[in-house]
Image (cartoon, rainbow over all chains, first blue to last red; front, side):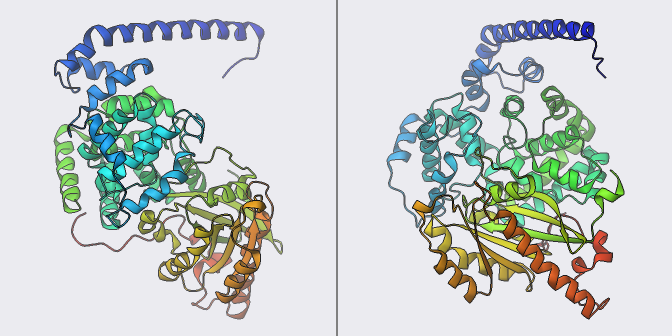
Length: 324
Length: 216
């Protein structure tokens, strides 16, 4: 409730400047902390789940200028992908008859309209060729999965911080490690089982949000498919998505994506009116990044409780297994 | 929200289908918000918008579901065809392949949508006449054979967008209002056509896909 008198406005400006200054100092301090302590720790094999790293990831996240360095350390390289493998995948002739390789025909349609607000990926943009290369290489590396619309967003976000071969490595790693690939196959049986699982988990973690969604008659797959396949890049503004990735990349499995989706639903504060609810969930949600991260890393897991979390994780694992 | 703003006599669920990149999302934003997004993005899964129209003094609420064009998504998006009373099947007049796929989309509708769904064929991107790869006559011929109406639009300039959506809604409205006069109250009239039942139409979503056994 803002008064429109001149004095108040002036104070606001001063407050704003002070806030910016404070934020800049905090970022400089964080960067320092990452360089002197956390990055060396991760390099020497300390897991991303360790306390000091989690603390830094939740409070403030990874400063954008060092994401290129930190993200690969959080993800690791479980498939031991090398730059040579990337080059081989790029050089290999595509075979449209193999698995889902024909899906590569959609890559040119999508690259130019990936994160259009940044213009990097449009034809002639600095990252247009790199994004095309990463997606082509992925299709040849995983012909069983191929290209699925939405993947271009994940590759693009990695490309903002990493060179092409590393973006390819990161994308392949999170897909493999996170079972996200099972979702990307879009098997209707899996999707329907997963939606059922999501509904149960939401009811446990956020009963109010659950009943509001039901009252409004919003089908979960209306927003969940988009949220999960883009790893939230098409769910929230880019800065917020990156902030969420900071805390999620250490373990991007479907259970964590589920928790993130619940956190976002809570933060979104869904309107009672069915049409407004559906319209809001169709758009990017402008939520507070700090609140979203806290809900994801603390509130929602706490509400579910460690015991139930383990049970749910196990249930989800079985569903994934049945469709892998 | 005041009840009067929310009041409508009819609720029509429509779907937008067709290959990737033909301009489905931009047709929708042009029709519902009069916007063309130069920064358009690909649709992942399903998106949704509504607009109210006046027909003979009655308010018709068009609830439009925009779907991803990639074949892989059809398993998910086709669930949204159920309960739809109209479909806009869109192709790009500058890309022959998107027109060649129209038959596959029609087959898709026949398999998953209600048999009496009203279908309109839409050739989009008339703002690029120099790149045209499908002639108007040819598309009209196909539409006639399949008993569809045909419109050519430009989501970019706005040409014919309003007209095409309105025509489809009008077509459905005339069937609905006739059905009501002829056999008022009889059970075969689809619920979504009955004004007095407008509120009872399940909003949104596909009917639950049949359980594949096991789980949950």
